[in-house]
Length: 411
Image (tube, rainbow, N blue to C red; front, side):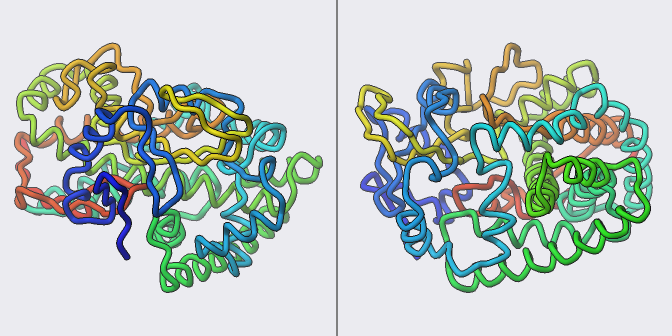
């Protein structure tokens, strides 16, 4: 499958996977927005344009208010986004892909559990889990940081928050990755079948877990959402959809930014040295990891009214692709944007989005990263790459290394 624009923009290519930033720079230098003809979308690459789009209340995620049900069905067929009953119920509709009162209602039910104060109460639990994981790996001279360490933390912690038993957390990663892969631009029938089958399995699992919580409530997010359903604040389908979204959205993206974050530290040894010497920089370092290699570099919006962006007029119904990964490397916003700087401040990056769809789980993701990288630098005197050019994931919607093989030495 070949996806290209008139500018030669090819996000499925190996070259783009290894270095999307050359292509992003070309798009930023191009007047106006670039039309991605094979996906019928206008790409916003500059920080100013991306910010305008995501902060505009007339820019929405769902087509519900700008197209008829027949038109939406036709667009789904054209994108091979149809004939997926469970995917349509629980993934294609979600907190992420809703707007207005529906979005506000659903977000309110889970927001209170993701505040900085409540997330920080998990610090000791996360630290204990990370310490145990590192203990189990420390005697090995070489590991794959992504598979052996990073992949085990976010799903485990989010699973505990939701109420998933520890022994089931590894399966969450499999379901999440197999569902999320269909959000990218390669929508083959094989990838479609994989997404639908895993959505179905995930749904049946959550059905059983919900039944257990209804009999024996606990102090977890699933129990809170069951209470919201009983109060009429959330439907049954919305409960399952929201549970899936929380697990999927915070899982793969945090694994990806953990991998790319460590890769950046190794590529910029002076920054790693500075962070070793002054752990108070960890908060700015983590923010810089999100800016430097945004793990979710692409989202979309539809305009509900005629609008002007980057000096161009667009009619209602136009679809925009907002390139967070490009915006976060825009030199008009960030001095020396291609330099990784652990002390960068201010750092008003857009990796978590902005406006109504600002990432709910950003505090938890940043806490995970703070604990993991602080622990690594405290316990290991050297961390080096074995493969000097790790392979990165392909596609437009994700950014992170497939593997990151490292050699380390304890202090």
